[in-house]
Amino acid sequence: MSGRPAFDLGLYLVIGSQDVAPGRLEATLRAALAGGVTLVQLREKQADGETAVALGKRMKDILDPLGVPLIVNDDVAAAKALGAGVHLGQDDLPAAEARAALGADAIIGVSAGTPEEARRVDRSLVDYLGIGPVFATATKSDAGAAIGPEGIRRVLEIAPLPAVAIGGISAKNAGDCVRGGAEGVAVVSAICGAADPEAAARELRAAVEAARR
Image (cartoon, rainbow, N blue to C red; front, top):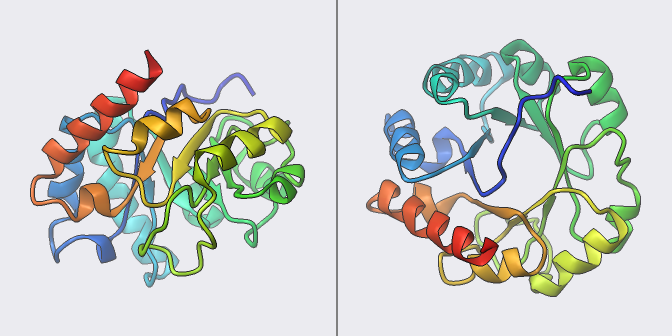
């Protein structure tokens, strides 16, 4: 599995067409990358697989020259078509099936918000965890109760993997997540909903780097 691309969970942007103004996805993505985003997940809530792949190709045209990996939310078939990684929720395809479909070189992430969910993670198949919701969030209505930075520690005690914190993350609390054990933070609205996505990304990245030091 040594052929997987290197990836940095420092500032992980989750983005789809529903998260930005019409026609602004690529501009928002470029701005976020200029501000320091290190990993990008395509999460299309309503689009079919063909539409998601078409959008993913446009995103990869931006990401590939910068060496920033693309991760696809849930959709293993779209990830395979794009040569991308995949992020799986607790109710999605098992990691073993995703690994079999995508091969040894793909990045695979799994969501885990509780010790019980962490126990179900096969660390031989998974590259990173998405842990949350750390704080209350309106972006994902079914995210569950906030676990706080201490919840990150509890998950990692059981499944010690590289981890990114998600849920209600801002520049003010990003450092708390890193000090709780996460390598970085994943955000949607903190960048996609910002008037200046580049400045928002830069502030988040600075908070993460300060806590890492």
